[in-house]
Image (tube, rainbow, N blue to C red; front, side, top):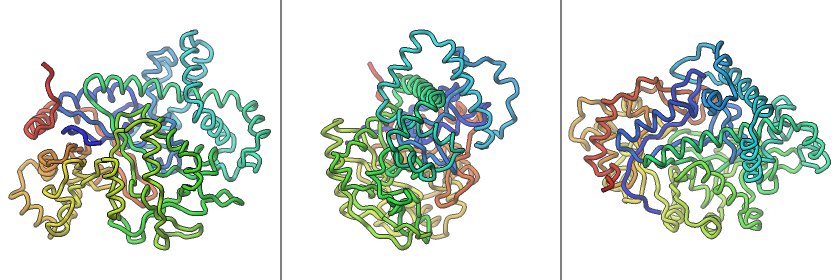
Length: 503
């Protein structure tokens, strides 16, 4: 659906300042909301919020519906009486500009386990009732997820398809026995989700009350080693003998990689999903609406046709396009959940069929200014080619920062950008592109916080196809100054993106 003219910031919660080594849902999150309001912004976009596995990627989560325990604020647990200040007495020295995930895990998980023990021992009848209500309401994904994580802990992190066959293949007797044996561990994982959901809902309520809508990412694929695949193997293309993906997801060679990107996720068994009236997908959309106001669908083109690579390939070059029933899926979602606020990440190899699917449901597509100056006037990322029903970004989490991009851009791109702008301002290239985004006809404009701060390549969030060193960037607490807020607010008001003042 088309959205009113607005703008906002792209920032994942892990990037907040925090003394626990990773951004969380504590005071810095609320301060960021305040900064958005003071800057006349109306949108906050986050990456997927699920519990991350190997590589710490939000796009490789142990669950498509659960929340990341590392985002829980220990300080807010303290306010509940579940932890004390003494529990924070010997925190290690964490780097201020990036996340050291290993040290964070070593520090935060023991705190969560202590909070869980205190909850079990001291929860009031009202807290117990709230917990039971949460478990019942979310049982459609929570039961499988909590058991999956308990089993994973018991198996020392080994992937589910390497567990004992009777557990990997979900024999009812074996599952019943595991639920009984792992009752305490299952309770812990349910408690953690309860606390994540409670803290996130409080933050979301605070944002919504001040006119900030949250945009959340829904990756098209889920991780192979996830509760989703383990609990629903029939809706994925898996090797029946090994449990490995029979067909792997990815994209062919593109802007980011000469050999394409081989993600390794199993692709969907769309025929089976359609027979089930897309029940799992409907539940997935239902679950994310508990967290966000607007859904950004990552890799939207995969709902029209997806790149499938056979098991055994080591790159994405030798794949093929297979059609997907995207129209039937979104029609089923509309019928069961109503017309949803959806943005479509329509980057990559986009065909008229993909555009038709996007436009059939009026989903706004994405425009990236860093892609605009490498060709001629027909480039769809040039602002004069934008439709109104789209979202413009200076760059995304997968791009270099704008300063880094410009410093490494070709002379051709720099020359075309200079001619397009007329001149480069003394404020820096990042402000030139921010101004270009805000002044465009696109209904929404989103700017990564790194670009607002004018940071170089070192602040980049993700390098596609690079296995390590991603998702680590954090900003310092003193970065969000009143001068920065005033400048962003001035441009936002100038270009008609500020919230309409109520009489």
